[in-house]
Image (cartoon, rainbow, N blue to C red; front, side, top):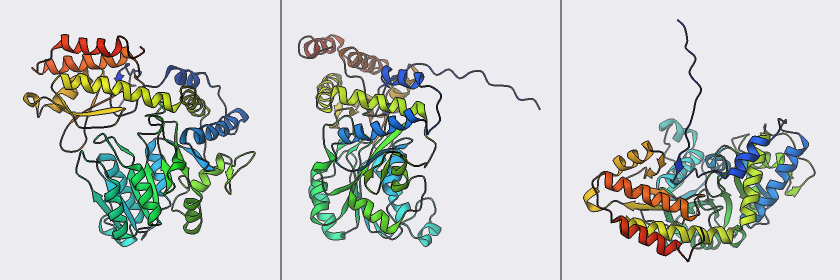
Length: 413
């Protein structure tokens, strides 16, 4: 039997207008492509890693020494953060969407005993883990966290900061305060908020561990480095219990970034093979974030999201989200039930919007790294065209008037 060689893979340019990954900035792509061939212990690669950890501390807003990045996507960062959770640990997890739900499953896997794994290997029901299911479209509130921690008194508590499954922002201040009051170590999924929102993690002392990703707010190549940050209390717990992992052990991983015993050292030790290309791209994405400033970027997201929100509302849609980088909406009543059809039509044309991944099915439109008049106007017009193709009614003149009124004088292009 002969084997035919496949033709070269050609992936066309698309408009990434979903919850993530976002469009990668041209400067980041250039840094990736222009990196020389270098091994993972070459001097400039190591220097880039040292500079990355210092830039990350500035972006996170922290003095935590154990602030670095894990090779891979946001799931790698989350797995690293959850590695400190041991079988039998008492955990409370708040889930209000697809991704916090997967995080809760991860915590059940981490905290399950061997007997619980054997009983249900793919979805162990760890008795020590309490998952609080918040209805789709509703946020996790500080009052809910307070009441739950007071009742269960866990070692760990988990919440997503921004849940992209439903487009909801959860109460970070209320979560941190409740964790601090009840002597619980909080863990936060900041995959969607880092690089978009202007916050400093040192302002939330009840939270011991943070995990994010490169391809959303930081707008870097998806497979580069996922930021994490851990407090001294988290590291002390990990030193006491250990972790059932080598690659995703925060203490081992930190050593390669030149962080040993809570101190920056001159040179890290080998932990895994890092890519000079990825380091160069990640380094440039962090530089871009700091040059623009989180305050300016956060304000820009809120401004452009308001334009997109008002435009789709003008088309008869109902927006149910409150994230500035993503809107989640219900289609007009006469198109209800055709969300997947609309999304597939858009994606077939290179307009990459997304449905929600859990019931009820809604439409998600994101503006990651699309913070200018032309990009947002293009998204609005493409979505209006998709509505019309399904037989919906759109007053295009009203849409154009809205865009002109918002962008004509008040928002820089």
